[in-house]
Amino acid sequence: MSQEPAFRPVDEQVGYVLKKAASSLRAAMDKALRPLDLTVSQYACLELLRQQPGLSGSELARAMFVSRQSMNLVLKGLERRELLTRSPVPRHGKALPTELSPAGLAKLAAANEAVSVVEETMLAALTPEAERRMCADLTAFAAALTDLAGEEDPD
Image (tube, helix red, strand yellow):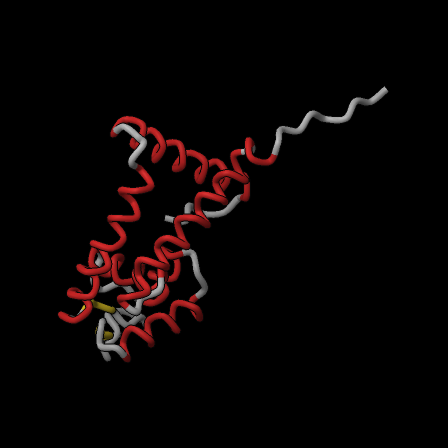
């Protein structure tokens, strides 16, 4: 006789809990960024450009796990609002380097304050050691799944 596999309740399954946490984080960040007229994707783009000025649209798309077309829409919107600048001269090939404008830096500073409140709230119950461990575990999860899928490391 075959036995039915034992399944844990959905709220005890890591994948479900991780998705629930990610959805809650996204909703909280959306709410925090709304008064600044930024989306989470726009915020992430600005932060990536602060950390790595000169990235191309393709490099940003890879770093944000979105298509080049989606990234291009984000970049055009931020450029229209004068939050970033794109060089008219490619540094190599067709890639146009992108950098934050002074207005983009100011907007990002305000956004970082808003997002830090969200993150502090989310992590309030964790010790610094537990937070480091969680980051290490999540990084290991991502690496394991990337290997399983046979894809390149998304970073």
